[in-house]
Amino acid sequence: MIFFGFDFQFSGAVNWKSRIFELEKVLNYDSLYFESNHPDLYKIFSDREAPLTFKTDSIKQQNVYNQLDKITLQIDTIKNLTKDELVMKRMLIYTKNLLTFMWELDFQHMDDTPEIANMRDKAMANNLIWLKEVMYPGKKNHPMGCQLSPNV
Image 1 (cartoon, helix red, strand yellow):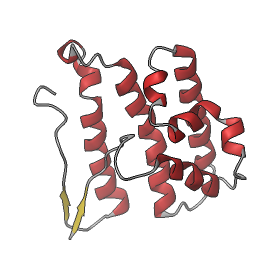
Image 2 (cartoon, rainbow, N blue to C red):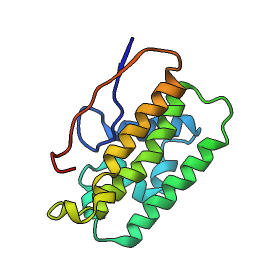
Image 3 (cartoon, rainbow, N blue to C red):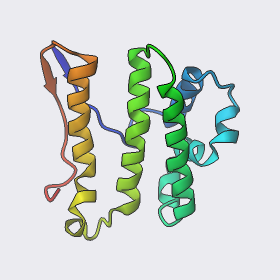
């Protein structure tokens, strides 16, 4: 029996800077490559306040999206990804989703943009399906989760 949940947040026990180390390892980058070639994404992963500082800067937002897409495409070229590498790829895909959620949602008027307000929950549901089908096929699964808001 497997208990799991799959959510992406820039808070909690996981040090996001450790994600940079993992990405560098998967992509065979040296330790300075990521910071110099993906500076806005590096800032997002290394500074918890950065996503909020980018909220009103559409150029930086687009840079981050482009950097995420570029790295995801690089991972796509790797044959026979390990389970950890598959999770890393999934993390990159849903980091884009999380950032869109953070940058586009007006938390004062969540009901005005239900497609954005529900984006995080939809991503978590898709991640549960992915975990069941890709990471733990044939296993009995018990997802665990939380609710963002009673209105979402």
